Length: 370
Image 1: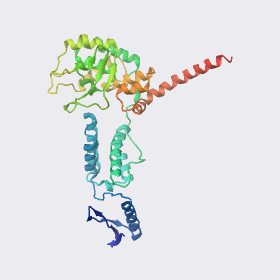
Image 2 (image 1 turned 90 degrees about the vertical axis):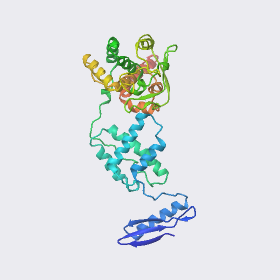
Image 3 (image 1 turned 120 degrees about the vertical axis):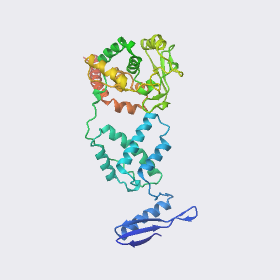
Image 4 (image 1 turned 30 degrees about the vertical axis):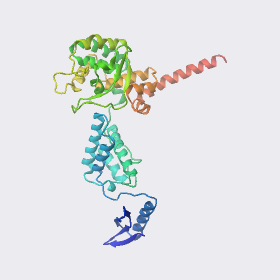
């Protein structure tokens, strides 16, 4: 039976509990009335009777997130780990030493609202996704009772770059490919940009390629690793599963007969090896500069980044009715949901084509009745 006592102007409950044979009571105060304290104590007693051993030891939110990240996410790709560490720094900055037990849904919503004042909706969504996964674990562990991230609103004042401004259409992609091919003797980075456009690989995956990953017999490129071009931590695991990319003969011949014969080779056979840097790799600044100059010279808009080549490749495949399941696997997405969400603008545009095709099918069906 819980004991209820008055402490100054508020009330406190004490619930008897034994852990490993030792008396370890649960106490909590600050209740405005005796009835409120008694109801709270009754819930704790009910939980204990059902075997729920909730932790009543205060946990600093930032510390708990850090431990959760190290236990569950430390084996992720370097770029992914860096994003989780960024979220941890945001929690430290915004919540300081606040205990996770002291955060409710209203307070968390205010945090998202403030964060959204100078960040895009996508940035707010990513931070919320990280925190939500951590908070769900805290609920499962009995650290907190309720998930304060459930049903929150994602608001943002900064307008994100429009989806259609992140990739090129088929015609402009052809023009760019011709330009890169015509100027390929200037730098190995022109070959890198060509491969980015022809494969849709992430920049770190392009840098992680070794010559042994090229299967010239079956025209396949094996995507097996990524290279950390920001933190100079070397090779790391992929963001998703390993995959094999079917390639065209023109691109494969370009690498077999030209780049592989003329480029400087590292000891471990890196395709895009930069002997001028200590890490042996290229930052994304140089290829972005080359790409920007090319697009301006060709009067192509929008001016995309290297990552935009990935969006271009995937968008072109979808526009040309390539099965979304295959496109998702080729892109290295976790599942088709990621593809459908990221390229919803493409699928919306394709819907117009499907409507026309549907009418044509129906017209053919009715011809026999005419």
